[in-house]
Image (cartoon, rainbow, N blue to C red; front, side, top):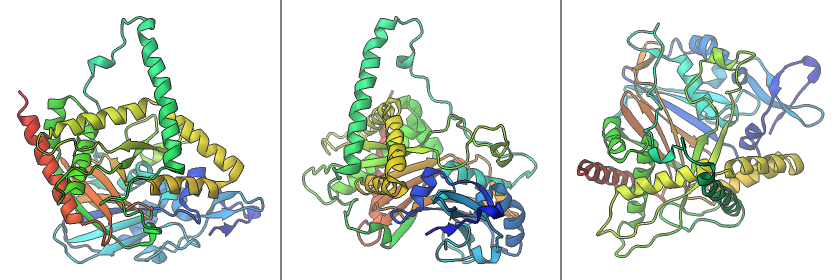
Length: 447
């Protein structure tokens, strides 16, 4: 549902991007939850002032709604925001800007209280929304000093160096890249249209999964331990995390079985496609001459979850290397570009609804979705409330399992959205913890 736009009023800020339309359609409606764990009991008296003076100015979309002009073209239409209407609502009504906030004053095992931002995915992707959230937060120890983030420098791989090599030596690489592009694009097309993952302990295949109740749970790892594995294997932190998730998932799928039963399962890995890698401030994002960084700028990578070959002779580190190889191949393939062109073609000739159906099928045919975001190194505070930890989650998609990760103060918080009554979240977390301990021990045993 969208509203009618009166162009004569001049009340729109910008056209709605194609991706934003896909995520807010009759087929697909995806939201992002950002959960802040407060160290102290929450005083909600400054909430309205914070929203008005800090949150709303971050982006015009936070005070806009989707509207159609007389030609059926969707725009973000500026409206007057009644902040009271956005606190503690169950749904996101389409006659108001697509966000709300929940303030939970009851203590839990993890926090003295919680602040939950619910933001529709059409407003922006994880990068945009994390940048918006960080604009509301300050360093707890010194608010005048900006937050800092872990270095994104990867461990150099000598095998990737081409300095001093002949052009003829690169021909096999070019041919292999071209073959991989065609192969990966064809596979992605089939996965989105015809080929579904096997029914398994992490994929129910039930119709309407997006409307069923879910359970959201979390677990935490030490980044220092993950860096130990990274250093020993000379891979990236993302490779290690993905390997742990893949191995833990396979162990969960194998639990209680006497023989290996490797169902075909794939993960949709969300990839930020921006050329920049660090967060930009809101002021930098909205400069007229600045590179466009706000909005939805990401791609899906279809990554097959490696199979267990043997429980007796299992080398857990194999899952890290396999994850690295699979993700690097997808990143270096031109399939991401071809998929983007396909979506644009579908939108142009068949409309946003047909494109949304294609994306819906892509997600539904896979077994899980994976996403991760880099958080700050220092402790943050929101309106003088120190933030003990945080996590985020995408909701509304047709998958039985979603895993989202964020780093903060030397810890990695991993959140799970599981289909209620189908996936046992405690057993899944136990399997992933087991995979982590196996990998850490195997890495420490490397001379």
